Amino acid sequence: MEDKRNILKEDSPFSWKLLKNGKALVYWSGKMIKTLKEKDCSKLKELILKGDDYRIQLFLAKITGNFKHGNERVG
Image 1 (cartoon, rainbow, N blue to C red):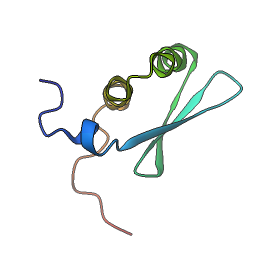
Image 2 (cartoon, rainbow, N blue to C red):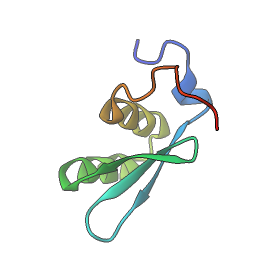
Image 3 (cartoon, rainbow, N blue to C red):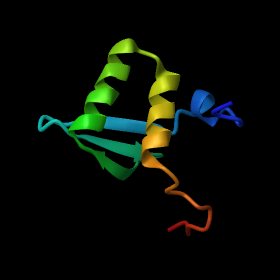
Image 4 (cartoon, helix red, strand yellow):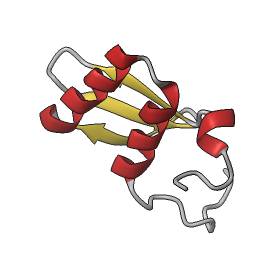
């Protein structure tokens, strides 16, 4: 199973913004964490056209990788 705690289905922590230059910005809980270049941005656009929110969240989780380790301080 890909999402054992159902975080991607229930909370949808990732959001995105498509840019005109063929790139996309990926946000997690309102904070920008990654910029997608042309190849990954086109995959994101395909998923958006299909309209499957869970697959979009799963793709963004996989593409961002292991960026959060649990030891981050709250500002």
